[in-house]
Length: 155
Length: 475
Image (tube, one colour):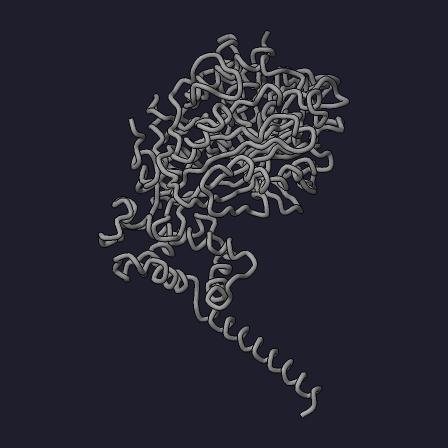
């Protein structure tokens, strides 16, 4: 085998590898819709908490039914960023705008936790976390768990 | 026969309503007033039912009312009560130096009036809106705010310890205590429509003025233009139920907003080259500060504090002033045990009105066209310094990581500077009493009058200007 053919083979190999990764990502993204990604995310990020996993399904279903993401300006573009980044994040250590993806992921996990009694119980990891209904300040006003109502000023 | 009125007012937002309130108090009992509102009246209870998913309601949005080729959006509520239906209720006063930007810093345009000229009207508006605010502020004020200040968060308290009066609990129309028919703000953080009606709106604060027997209000009546003769406007043309109608008025008050005030004047043949030119608003950039060992809790209301460290000073010769907002929404950091070791701040920069950004006529006489190229380099220079400024002013906090958006928000929900006030028609459209330089019975209200916009929220100041304009006009 000559040097030249070896070089070509390597290039070909890299191309094939690249296309295979691309196809795998595209395929996975196509299979994993936004709701599935959200459930996977919640399972992964909240593994240290005692949560009935059916809560994740209930949350996603309720969010869909009540147009939750649209009302939070979580538009189609953001959803696609989340889906795509979720896949890429498990392969690459970093990528452009990863910080935005992490922020969106925090928003999603935060919205789930706000829909439970976790913050009401002052983030007690020993207690079982119970889903109490999709967080909606119009149905449950005054429930910002970080406000002065929950952390009153010391006299 | 055309209907005759002593006063015709266009719009029912802050600018119009504060003018009308003052006018009704001072004018005779025989006066006849027509109010033309382009939108509908959607009462608070109906808007709340919509948010709770209990009712279907089609509310007209700002984006349906104008055309543009630019990516930039302008947000307001084109219905009864105007943007009081969607504002957050932030009511800082301007600083005295904001009114003399050109004299002090050699940029932009001075106002034809001073802080001292507006101060008495600030006090009056703050009383009407029952503003909650702190004892000490970066702007001079006589006496305390009507309601006590909202609580600072743990992070805010550290910043206030360091910066004193330059870091304060935000003055706001989100009532810290129940007052009148308003509840007490409890940090629900959805202020466009407050779930407990704590925020001042035209409906809950000034709705009664529209029940005055001297006032006739017509809904879904969009004003298109004015008939003018020499230095006076004679009548108002409006479209209602798809018919063009006309009403004659002794005095005509334009209190629509900075898009439509200019559009009405342009449709009326106003040839002043300043009319419509300069549309702008502030630019907001979010930054997240992650802390090693500092929980950010205990603040009240959606925005717990304002920082003035980057606001006024010699730097304004080179780059834009910035006001800081400390957010208190229920955001989290997605890391076990560090849930709230995080702050979100918005850094809001003033812009300078650019002539090439403007309101223009379109083929549709009901729809103005907004032409917008970009914000000023002056504002951009301010934004470009943000990493350095965060390090300078926040560096003493136990910061683990800083994330700064590399873009500004699509809108700050303010529309300004299309009918600027000034000394004469060479530099402006209206005079210091908000009367049109040419049409001497036309008063043009609102933030369209701002020659420079400052980084502060415009509502308190425009409301104060309306009270002043009514008083000056009737003198």
